[in-house]
Length: 349
Image 1 (cartoon, rainbow, N blue to C red):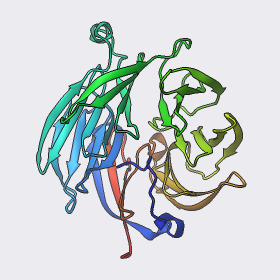
Image 2 (image 1 turned 180 degrees about the vertical axis):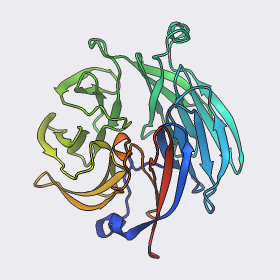
Image 3 (image 1 turned 135 degrees about the vertical axis):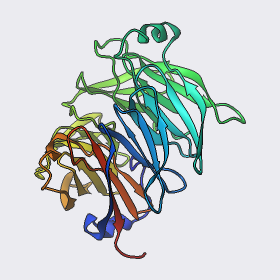
């Protein structure tokens, strides 16, 4: 699973990236940018690529490819739900839900979040795509449909399949492409519009906008440009900075530039109540400590490879972790090809 969910263990409060060592380098497994990396429930790693349309699943001991799924469209995002369903968000108009058992797989459902009319238009317009999905606390799925809005799906009773039940489309903006969503405890969402450089507070039931805030979002390939750190602080991802949004006041209270000599920020993940991982260009992962009182960040450790002449062209836009023992991340060593590097915790615990 991705690190966008809280790791309840205090492991990362007393350990750093220096406690991990690279154990394998999976060279050129994809012929284009890796869009997502995640762990299946059985501990295997899965990776997807933007333009080669490949979904790969690796043996958890040898790390050799044992399942190769070829999608008909580019894979913009891929992840696993809490019950183990693997979902690919594709260019075009649809999403595939996979059940993986051993070396066997099958499509449980294909979902088309766009309306019937938009489905027809999308067949002749290559700009349509499903950019991402988020699983809400109650198990509902939210799909980010480019040029369309959010589509909400709920699991059918006594079934592995989902059915449509709601949608949201911003009524006023020219660029209606929602790029991220965070679910709050007070019956609200926070949604981001990266291209319009704003975020909005949105009531869950009424879909009423309660506040709009300007923010200079990054244009990285990250599929997560917001992170809820605690009940009061929401982080917004910039190019080299993190904006801190006070949820109660509904205003940005601080902008912090992180100077770590690793290019632009491309991802951010919560590990514990005060520890983060940030993915950067130049194949870099940086561990940060957050001081909730002072609203400041401290660099704890950094894992990067400076000997890669092409690394500045790529972003560590997806990181996966398994039981605080394995870390998997893209590591690009060649133009137009993508690799994976896997780090293992050095000691027993």
